[in-house]
Image 1: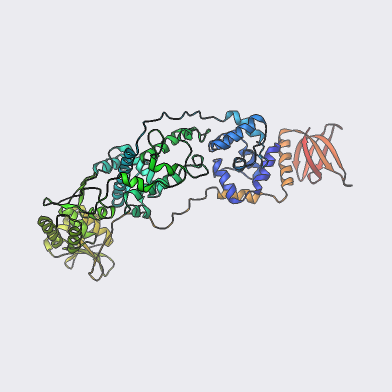
Image 2 (image 1 turned 90 degrees about the horizontal axis):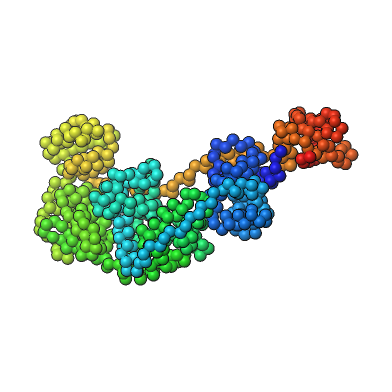
Length: 569
């Protein structure tokens, strides 16, 4: 026979709005394919021991302690936020009383006895500031690399081995494990997002790259703090003591490892030291406030806005270059070393890439003269002129017929393009002194550019147009995740009868017949009085209950509509 608690829970479920029911199904990890027909099925399933054990894993420390106390003492959970959460997750009744099934199953719920990690070494403010600077510049380098070539990820979300090697070779990171930490930090801060198993830089991340170092660090620190799970966040908006993190979700066996991972991210971003204490300039973050940017800035190396241009086609920055200047300089020169003093090298390929991206010889000269402390060396000026003269000798643009046309001043160069094996996917074929392809102009342009041809993009009128190869995540808001439980919720709503008491009575009678349960049945008589009959239920159909009267020892058939209530004999 159905337990009274199941009826109480089913009635409560019927009162929930769609958002509350969706939250409950998510918190209790209910599969969208659950074969529930009505709220009574849902109540039975939610009061199953396995479901209770799964649901307990997401209970934060305070709610878990409140429930454990109520179960062990046989009392109600006091009114407050903990009771509200436990009611919402179907562990206690709206009055705070644990359901009997929860009390019975409590011994089966595994408790995580996670000891706090051993504290690491303390760190002074200056050393923490050095780590903050290193983390900020490394993440900026990772994002710079991802903008031009998105970073592929494996199923777990981590970067593949090839991507880690690429970032190490580019000087963005110095160890493979650093890459995954920085990507996790960037994802939590909204600087990157996962699109088709690739990490793409978001428009916010692109904007972040142009900020000053101290602003970069502080912005990510606030976002990383705000993304911490609810159980780690006190009312003031900071975070609870680090030695309590592993115990924040006491019934989730996987939580201690996740807590350690989150702590490592805060350490990686210099928000805490090895001992868990925040550096002096970051203590406000742990209290839900801001860090002291001025104090951090005083400990960081000063950013510079000038470089030394050398005759060997290099530029040497005597300190961290202003991020906006660094971004533009790296469009025309390859950075060879990263430190407080960085080295950039100009080559024919890097200058051609800048011209392809929309620079001109004059804009390059003007920018470099303004940036240089030593003027514009003649070898660099010559290389700019030579690259500019060569650039644009191959032009790519739309054809009047909807195809893409490739033209060149030098017929020999056009012939080289036609037989280049790297360009075979374009399917180029000659026609009227040009090469035609059904591929789009942008596709053809970038394939030619990657093959090191001096190519420029033009429109239908032959006017030069600049192409931006930056790969950013879409600017529009990401689509809301699919509401997987919607069909299940709709089925429960549709099956809900307007008369819950009648629906539950039918459910009780069905279960009693299956179990041949002996019931005390209260029957309404035609004159309005009520009579109790003790009988063993043996059949139910056509709106009638059949069974043997245990007192009179006769078979009886009762109209279900006349039954007021039932209870076990």
